[in-house]
Image 1 (tube, rainbow, N blue to C red):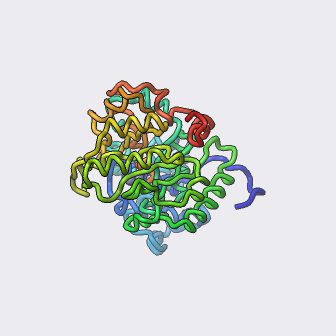
Image 2: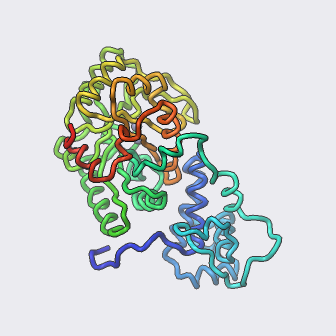
Image 3: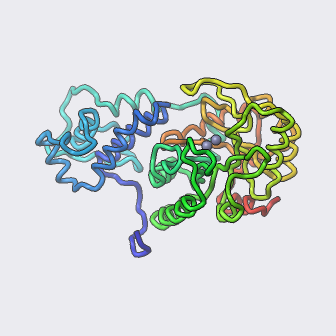
Length: 380
Ligand SMILES: [Zn+2]
Ligand SMILES: [Zn+2]
């Protein structure tokens, strides 16, 4: 893409692509494993470059499954969309318009398709509370793409964040030492920054910005797992502990405070590292002097992350309330590893609202310019 390209004028509204993306989004939002969703995302990628006429002809001839990556399940979604059998929701802006298919209007009395079923099962509210706060969030400071351990390309994360109404999304793939998550070397991160620039060029005028970030590992000695030079090129830096979670409490406290003191650190990610549910099993949180850690966050103006992932719910409520009482700022983050998980912010909002945390203390309720000014130390 070049600067000569016309400005971005909205998400792709071709029926089948929009339907496949919506199926994948709902499955991810409903906490289905990313690999189970992959077939629908792959099918959308197969269909996207094809002329509409060809897709319609293949529906009519029953030859969709001859295309790479299209099986019976994905072909059924494509066929339903081409024939105009899409739920009302897809007719709304942002999710594509239903089209009259090659064989006219939808037949009456047909069994509802997969998408209609998913809309019924998974499109409802994720939480009972937190909705007022959710409406005040303007973006998300923690997300992963398939450059590290996420399941989708950078642009798909950006498009979905935009469709959810975000003004910004910070892309925070992992740092080099987290090899199990395919952490980015300095060279790969430098390359990724070019991709982020290209995505933003493409989205110019859409009122959305993909921000440059990292989830940088906090090393055993409190250092950060990326060069100062690279970190200083980023907009927002989330620092998290991912290793030796069971280390001695005093050493863990020193380690975390070391990272918090680093002037480049903006957000302390999932501070205890606990897992409370899910297919990775459960584990207790790290032990550390939470008062000392949160006081350091106040002193150095580092936001305490409210990690929205259902299996994390981090910090635990007692620590969340301690951080609130000590005057910390917060960032409610999805830590999404798939586009549909960007909606997990609802879970964090419910917890923040229950803890009575003022919206203005939550940095992602701020407009982009205020966030960026804070992140470079403007209000530190
Ligand atoms: Zn993490
Ligand atoms: Zn993460």
